[in-house]
Amino acid sequence: MSSAPKQLLSITDGIFLTVGMVIGVGIFKAPSIVAGNTASGVEFLLAWLLGGVVSLCGALVYAELSSRHPATGGEYTFLAQGLGNGAAFLFAWSRMTVIQTGAIAAVAFVFGEYASEIVRLGEHSVAIYAALSIMAVTLLNLAGTLQSKTLQKVMEIALIAGLLLLAVAGMVVTSTPKPAATGSGGGGDILFAMMFVFFTFGGWNEAAYLAGEVREPRRNMLRILVGGIVAVTVLYLLVNIGYLVALGQGGIAGSKAVGADVMRLVAGDKGAVVLAFIVCVSALTTINAAVFTGARTNFALGRDFPLFARLGNWRESGSTPANALVLQGAISLVLIVAAAMTAKDGFDAMVAYTAPVFWTFFLLTGVTLFIFRFKSKAESAFRVPLYPVIPLIFCTMCGFMLWKALAYIFNPQYGPKFGNLVLAGLLVMLAGIPLYWFARKGK
Image (tube, rainbow, N blue to C red; front, side):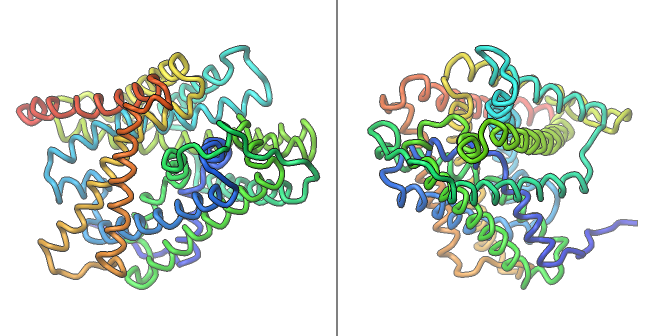
C-alpha cells in the first residue's frame, strides 16, 4: 500500500524547523569578512537585512516549486522537470564535487578555528581539526550512527540561546570599539561581502520541502517561511549589533573568531572557551546533516546513471550508502588540503570555490518557476505572492551574484589564488558536461 506524507506540522513547528535549518556556524565567522568589506556600521547591518529579504524571496519561490513537484530530490527534480535531465545531472555532479563538499569543508574550517581556541594543534591547527571533523562524522555515518531528532532540537535550542547570550553580552560589555580602518572595514566590496551573508543564510531551500507535511499549506506555508526567515534575520541583526558595540567594525574585521573575542571581553578566556565549545558542537551537527543528505544525493545519482553505479550501492550493515559516503568524505578532505595550501583562510577559500556554481543552479532553479507557470495553468498547493515580482527579485540577485563571482577571476584586488579557486569550481562543474554524454549512453 502506498502512503503519502501526513500533514502534521503546525505553524509553530514549521517556524522552529525553518530557523533550525538556516542557523549554522556562519554567523560566528562571516561577520569578519562582511565588516571588512562594508563602509560603515549601517552598511554592515543593511547587508544582513538584505540577506534576509533575498532569502525570503527565494524561499517563497522554492515553496511553490515544492508544491508543484513534491517528489523527493529538491533541485534535482525541479531542474529535470523544467530544463531536462542534462541540467539535473550537472546539478547532481556539481553538488557532489563542489556545492555540498565545499560547504562541508567551509563549516569544517569554522570548527577548526573555534576548536583551536580550546586546544591548539600547532601551526596547521585549523586545517587539522577540519580534516578530523570530516573523517569522524563520515565514519559515524558509515557505522549508521545518526543524530536523533531530540538531540537536534537540544542543540538548536542551545545554539539559539548562545546567540542571544552573545548578542546581549556584546551590547552591555564595557570596551572601546575599534573604528573601521582602511583595508579592514573601510569600504571594500559590498557584493563580495554579500556572498558571505548569503552563505550564512543558506538552508532556507530545505525549509521549502515542509510544504507536504504542513497543515493547510496554501495558507500556512507563507506564514512559516515569513516567520522563520524573519526570526533568523532578527537574530542575526541582534548578534551583529552586539559585535559592533563590543568590537567596532574594525575589531570585527580583524577578528578570526569574532564570537570568542566578544565573550573574551565579557568573561575572559573561560567565556571564550565556553562559546568555542558551543560553536564546535553546532559545527559538528551541521557537518553531520550535510554529510547525511549529500551522500543520499550521490546515491541517487549512482542509482539513476550506470556510470556512477558504485555510488548506488546501499550497504545493509548500518543501512548506509557506504560508497557515496566514502567518496564524499574523500572529496571534502581534498578540498581541505587544497584550501589550506592555497589560501590564508580556508572558509574564504571554500566560499570562493562554491560561489559561482552555487549561484548558477540557484538562478536556474528560479527560472524553472517561470517555465512551470508558462507550461501549466494548474493550481498548486502554494503560489508565490506578488508574482512575478518576487521571483524576478530572486533571479536578478542570483544573476548579479553569479556575475560578480565570475568577475573575481580577473580582479587583482583579491589576488590570483582567490580567482583560481573561483575558476576551479567552474571547471569542475563544466567537467560534468562530457560526463553526462557518457552517462546518458550508459543509461
